[in-house]
Amino acid sequence: MKNQSSKLVWDYFKKISLIPRASRHETKIANFLVKTFKKIGAEVIKDKSNNVVARIPATKGFEKLPLLSLQAHSDMVTIKKDGSHHNFAKDPIRLVFKKNIVTAVDTTLGADNGIGIALILAMFTDKSTTHGPLEAIITSKEEIGLLGAKELNPKLIKGEYLINLDSELDDEIVIACSGSLTIDSYTKLQLIRNHYDNHFCLSIKDLLGGHSGMDIAKKRLNALKGIFFVMKEMSQTITLVINDISGGTVLNAIPSFATVKFSTNDRMHNIKPIINKCYKQLKKLNPNEKHFRLSLTPIKKPTYAVDKKQSNQIINFLNDVFNGVKIYNQKYQLAQAASNLGKAFIKNKRLYISFNARALNIKDNEQIKDLICKRLKQIRAEYTFRIGQGWNPDIEVSNFTIKFKDYVKRHFKKNLKLTYVLAGLETKDLLSGKFNFKSGISYGVNITSPHSIQETLSISSVDFVYKILADSYLMFPAQ
Image (cartoon, rainbow, N blue to C red; front, side, top):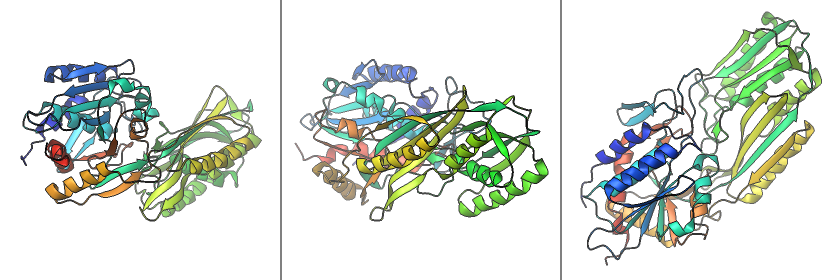
């Protein structure tokens, strides 16, 4: 086995990080991929959805190996630190290399799934690797519902086996993923002329945030749940009405900051003790949240406010509505069904609230839907929902999975465990039977806190995974 260098991977990752690639804005990264694949000498196709498919022939002597498809997605979750001026439409991600990790300055890193793309490009470029015929599948709009994979024409794909490179631990093979539930709602607001004397902005900041499925069981405080815990406590002591709500940026991330503007006749010195008490309670209930801030500042008088009755209904709803883990799988030590209160904001005299739930079994998602929608009816909300099945919900083990596991154990002395993720993977579309794949897995490098500004990428893990891919021909019998 050759001692493969991952320098190519890092060169490509740096180039990818220079290119803005928010969901639905993947044209630049798709054009970069087409240009790069053509320069390599690969056959390449780009479709109308900015999906990119490329192929290269096998190393001489390995032409009879099955066609292996390596798959990643081109978009990234775009979250930045509260107060950051980063513009995801034009600014590059600023990478920081320190010891064994890579991070970004005040934004998500985009290792999910930029490092997957970099691994594929390196495999296609590196002349020192030995491989059978290879196919690259790089899809768009993954982070907003796996849309690129759904829109991909099966006629473009020729692969027999699939390795999705969007998992985030190098010591496990992912063989199943959750289905998703999205609920979008709005409530018409009953506005009144604001006759109150004092006006404030309550804010909660610097929470950990994170992935709405994979981090949901890690006892990370949802900013919207935290701030409405405080609002509930205040409403039991003082009379107040809501002026504005803003929290959450994308549905598949746990909100890390939120604000509520409100009016009251009580003064700052009456409210501060309640907030201080709530801060201590939240710290005690959420010991992992070591650096969050809870603050109250005076603001100018808003012209209108939500009437008192509806303000209390909203406070009660957002404080009480289900959020977090519903089912925990003791065997795998993972959440199996959970819901994330993803966004809430006021615009054009309406309160918009959205949820993102995930479950291995679609019946569990349906139960979460019923639980949340029942509460939405109580605040007279109009709502829509989208619900989908996961991939391999019974967690069945394929021959290809066993082959990959044995290959890594034999050649790298690492015993990979089999698991699932409470997240959406494009495997559930690509391995649904619509394409001609015989089997597939998801495998990837060590990434922590994806979908947050704490996202990190392990340098040594990238080196390790590249070596595995570079000699992946050893999975298959000698031809």
